[in-house]
Length: 286
Image (cartoon, rainbow, N blue to C red; front, side, top):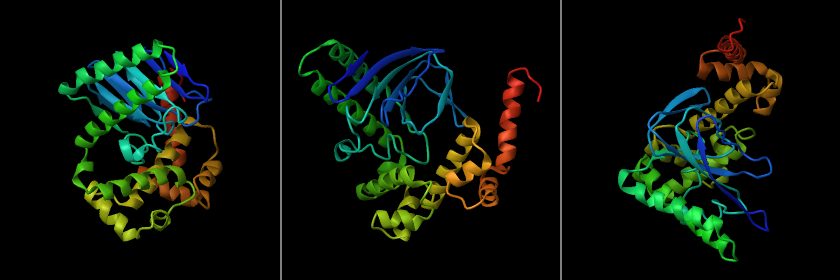
């Protein structure tokens, strides 16, 4: 079921089963997805890592996340674009920037508590009913329901993570930092660059992140660069030189040392290992 408004507003409800695909539409600018995974035996691969998902797990995805379902019974998908509902503009109300979606350091997902499942089932039924009604109030009603869905998801995710352990103003800084890293990690490589954007000192950022998860702001920046490097090596045909300069490194040697320090193999070895695995899984010897 799809709703399209006169000002390019877009929202889609979709039920998928095993072997069906979840895709990002090229015509949608920065779409966001909730994927409600149902069933006990679900598994995804996220940037080379396999993750087992429990029944009633919700994934919060952007175009920055690259996941592949290895096992799936069925799932419900809510996909929407900025024109329909901008989570950034409503951030003070729903608190999702840098938490549900723009989290540079991890894939955001959570399991719906048993006592909350009926609430989600009711919301889904209301969504389905409203998608079929065609009147001048439909857009506003759908936006209200999505907002409620986001608020409930945000509350649960906060309760299941460490975000409640730090002050609200510190949470805001973490969220802003994560979002800025997502925007600028290819061009801004130092903590001071982000501290300046946030009007904070690098030391203040380090202290806040230490409270949250023990990771430093610099680790977050490096992890995002490594993540992008792995994606480009895995999913594109770009040369090592192209990847090096696109990620903001001065030369291939510097990029190679940076990559090897984290992954313990060079970028070329990483690429060759992937190619070998693909060939073997296809029954083709390297």
